[in-house]
Length: 67
Image 1 (spheres, rainbow, N blue to C red):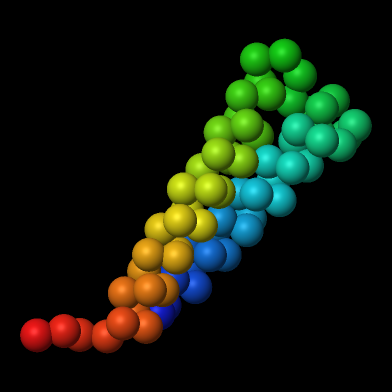
Image 2: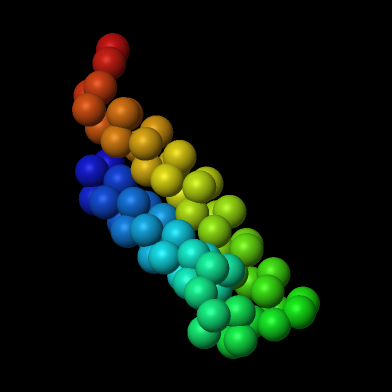
């Protein structure tokens, strides 16, 4: 479970960096113009979903088995 947490966190970090680059830098805006700008926007939103999943799996791993 801890491995899944780390993998999800690294994916969230990568998507967040890519989304920021594509939306907020001149080079990114040149690379993703007009409708292609949806790609970094989806990456930025998916980074939030992946980060939330990393938090949940981290909490479940920290909590340990119950029963």
